[in-house]
Image 1 (cartoon, each protein chain N blue to C red):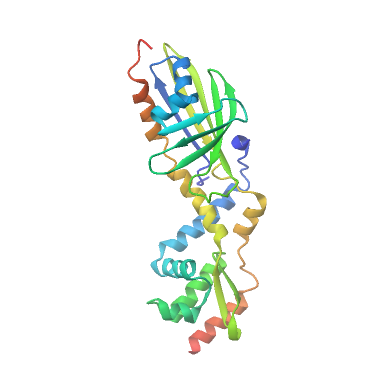
Image 2: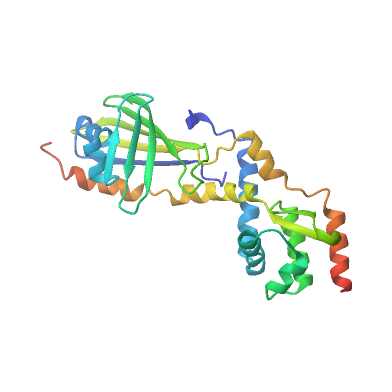
Length: 122
Length: 143
């Protein structure tokens, strides 16, 4: 049962992963790069530069940062070009964080209270 | 600990535990306030589901049934892919409070991560590619 499974030693690690995802997404250029990789698949820096209104130098800098954070993975592409692929695992960690924020208990509990009514004679 | 693993709410209801219990553990009760349609097989290991008009369905597995004090179930983590095996655990605790009930709901497990996935998510590949990337950066700088 997951109720007791909150080992404190790895929770900060999960938080660090989520933080890297959110930090990456806070920058519009990195958001555009990640969105391009998500929608059109692996691409080289040159591919990205041709598609996005961002200089190649800036794209290279962002890709380096994204790779260090584990959000993209560099892999050999054609003609010795480095190609970048989105890594979905950290995104799923961030999704878990968002899932907790999106879990609305206040709405249903208010509805429960309303459903049961003012009481007194139940 | 900034990662929200646990959500807890407590509320006072002006009805005895038996009434609240029925609202939490019967299809009729659940569909009146939580889902728009509901079904439940109220025994540990039993299945339950709720459906909403927007098309969303929550599939639950009943875990604890201690009438009229504890009702627990697990369900899929909303927002994760449908085939993701992780589930959160929801437990309702009902305590008599004067003529009414103090109801507590605790949902835990948002921060769970199987060891393998944790490693995959966290490792990144900071090491091996740095030189390759440095090469790329100089290539681009030269271009």
